[in-house]
Structures are given as structure tokens and as C-alpha cells.
Image (tube, rainbow, N blue to C red):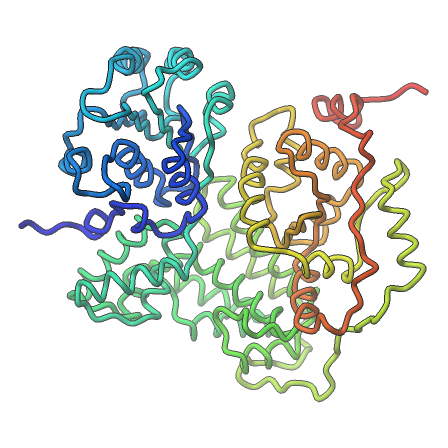
Length: 554
């Protein structure tokens, strides 16, 4: 038998084989077992996260006649696995996107199934369909035959017309977690009998950016180079990734304000073909490690060891670290916006990071001594009465209030009750909000959330984490926040208050959570905006025309 590449050999064949996407798999399984199937599904998410694989498994499962679907032994399963099932059709919309292609598909959809219970059409990269093709398809998806199921897959859901999206049951696929990928890669390496170093696997996972198909392709490349032995040095050499020692050396130059030495190192890395985008992301992680160390959150460290992170943290100001992280983030963002190479933006970032007086004593990661006196977070047994009064007043959400910013203890009370189930459920809604980039009417909600992530989520509130204090303050602006609250409530039936925190607050909360027994949080309650509210006509006008163009006459 000829050699089969890893991503094809280990492509999931059953629901049990799927890595990650547990919520989606369970929902689809329940729909099959309870015979409550939708006529159209929309699978959205980054490439390599399992959209097409799960679509294929689902198509096989709905036609399976065995007990455990898909059983892999019935005639329908065998026919599908052999690639000749007459009722399961896969179409690549990137190359079959004309009105004639869709008319042909629609005509065949009305024919009865030949072998299975359902005719299933999997349309990959559906956003590539032309407008006319979408309109032809829309007529069918509005009133589909009872024995037809459409599964639409796309990496760009915002390009799918809203009238099609609204008629589909939508699933947002997430990047696969690093631990889930590591577990799967170990299983594959052990099944194949290949030698591997775990750190090499972890680096390949970092390079894959959450896609299972990509990680297997990278693994294949690294194995071929290393004669099917996976070593960290080989992976670093192939993909232009710097060793930890090189990153620390560069960091030392920056911390010692030696821009010339840092720039020379970056120039050498660039000439040797290093992945500079990966270098910037790694530097951000190193800075975050130092921030975590300043707040004793050592189990969150990703690159630095506890001792070296703690030593470095002892000499640096937290706000300076956060500003430096912002500089690095900006260099990546600017490079992507202009579609130019990262190198010149990294050079500018190095100059900004190093631009301080050289009169300060030279420091090195391995030589820094932790100060004898540590600054500890103040722990309160009861909220200050005045602060409580202010919070109670702010919860009324009167027009005069400019921000809904809360105390750390208030956020800690939410964090205490937060659950993974709530976060996972609302993540789907969150991604739909981020999809509003090209929706003129609601774009400002995209702008408010695009640089955030869900930090904590309970039955009453969602806390979003932002990279900077400015972004968090903008999100907590009472006018925007109130409009977003009612939009989420009315559009998605999620009745929760929405709060924004910055990176430093997030780190403080993580530390406070470790000592949560020291806090009396019983007095902190989440109060929602007045039920009579809603997005005002005035604010809708501002969304379209801008704040400075809309004036309200008294």
C-alpha cells in the first residue's frame, strides 16, 4: 500500500475521532438520536478545525442504519467510506460557484434519495458563491425537500448573505486547545512508533495556530527532515524559530535600553530566515510571564521558569510592561493592516521599547535579585460603604452615568460563580458579535469587542478581557454598553450585564481568586439595565452617521 500522509491517515471517521469541538459533536449526536434534524447547517471557523470532517461524519451518520452511528459496517457507511455513496455530495464552492453549478445542484436535490434516508449536500467555502448563485440557492433553502440536508462550511461567515444565514442552524468552530492537540499528537507518534521530544510537539502546536490539519502537515514536514525522529532543535531550524536563550538575550538588551545590540540581533535573525511574526508573539508571551510573576500567578507561565520570571519581575514596573506589550501588539497589527513584512515594524518596536535613559543600572535576567519587601494586594473583608453606594447608583444606569467600571471585588464575585458551561455557551454568541465587522448597522459592537476575549461568565454577567486599559474603558462607556446589552438580549436572548477589564485587572483577579476565602463577596450583586430600555432611535442614528452628525433638539 502506498504511503498516506498523516492528515489524511488520521482524518476523523467517527464522532469519537474528533479532537475538540465537543459541544458541536454532542449537539449533532443528540439531533440524530432524537430525530430532530435541521434542513440546513452553517459550519463556521478557522481552517483546519474540523468543519468538513464533522460535516462528512454527520452526513454518514444520518444515513447509517446501524445502532451506534456511524457504525462503519452498514452498507451506507461502507459506501460512503469507499467514496461512492450516491446521496452524499461534496461541492467546493471556490471552483463551482456559478449560477449554473447551483442550478444543477438544486435540480438534483429534488430527486429522491437512491440509497440512504437523506440526500446530503456539503458545500465547502460557501462564501465563494456568486450573488446570483446565492439567490438561486436561497429559494431552495427556504422551502427544501423533506429528505434533503444542506451543510455549508466557511472560514468567512460574514460574506454569506444574511438571508441564507438566518435559515441555517449555525455552529462556530473554535481553534483546538493546545492540550487536546498534544494528546492527539502523542497518540499518533506512539501508534506510528516514531521517537519524539515533547517540547518539539509543543512548538509545532504553537506554529499551527489551533488547526489540526495544519499541525499534522507541520509534523509531517519535521519528521521527514529528521529521518522520522522529532527533535526540538530540528523543528526550530526548519521553521525559523528562535531558542529560548536567544529570546532572553534579546529581552535583556531591551530591558537595558541597548537598542543597538537588540537591532543587530534582530537583523541577524532576519537574515537567517527567522519567523519574525512568531518572535514578536513569543516576546509578548515573555512579557506576560513577567506580569504573571509580579502577581504570583506562576502556574500561568508559558516560557520563563518560575525563578527567572520572578527575578525579572522584581525590577520592572507593571504599567511599563503593559505599555511594552501594547507596542508589540501594534507592530503586528500595523504589519497586517499594510500587508507588508514584519521586519521594519519590529525594528521600530525595538527602538520604542529601548528608548529610556541608560543611566539606570544594567540588569540581566539571571542576575536580578528579588526585593526583600514584596508589595501585596489589599484584601477587604467588607466593601467600603461609599464604594457600595456608588455601585448601587451606577447599577440604575441613569443617563448621567458615563461608565460602568466596577471594583475588583465586584468582578471577583462574578468570577466566583463563573462556569465553563456558561462561557462555552456564550462563546458562540461572542463570535457572532465579532462577525459584525461588515454589518454597517452594528459595526460598533464589532469594534468594541474585536480585541477582547471572554474571561469569566456566570448566569448574570460576562466579563471581557482587553489588552489595554483604554479599550476596557471604551467598552464600559455606559451609552455603548447599554446599547450592546439590549442588542445581545433582544437578538440572542442572552440577558446578562457586560463588563470590560484590562490585562492588569485580569492578573489581579487571578491572584485574588487564589485567596478568595479572604473576601466577603455576599454584598456584590449584578443589577441589569432597566427593562424598559432598548437601543434608542437617537443612538441608531449615531451608529449610521456618527456622534458628531446627530443633534437632538430639546
